[in-house]
Amino acid sequence: MEPKYKIGYVDEDVKQVKKYQRRFRKFGFEVVGYEFCQGMTIDALMEQVYNSNIDLLMIDYKLDESNLVVFNGEAVESAIYDTKPLFPHIIFTNKKDDAEPHVEDWKIIFDKDEIFSEGEEDEEKVQHFITTLERSIEQYRKHIQRRKNDISNLLEKGKVQKLTPDEKHNLLKLQKELKVLDDSYKVEVPEYLLLSENMEEVENLKNEAEELLNKLIEKRKKQ
Image (cartoon, rainbow, N blue to C red; front, side):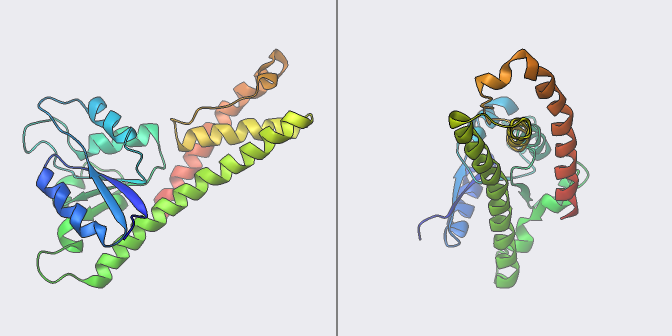
């Protein structure tokens, strides 16, 4: 089966990564692991994550058991949240009780043993988990693509005719929204919008972007 989605799995145990590569393959997921080395920093790990072009990130909670690193899964969750606040990510661990006191949103914690037991697996429970991952990925893709399409249409229109003040404002707002969804997105503000007469409008959008971020985060928590 050709993979539909690419999932990153942060776990210092290579055997665990290979185990879930096999288990997820039949559901159309390609699972990629990351290289751990003695004393590696969270920044070095996150650089690997951001360069792996994944659709969703799974994070094992107990990362310090091998003494390679001094941080655990909540540090990875915090790092991904700071850069890509709504990017699909979960804590996927058999140390659920350890994770709960340190992870703010319990809904992202999934117990490996409850989903993929060593004996006969509960197919309904497994399928529900897989569906949850798929929907999270597709929802994020739609958030991103909708804004990219609207931005592209306005940029193309701006090449052939002057945009109205409302359209200029909407273009900047859409790019700020996309920056909130994915901090790695490069804002492509047209040169004509960077004239001094428009700088106040650009500045005012910072507050709107912050308000939007808070609303999106609250909406996500309620889902």
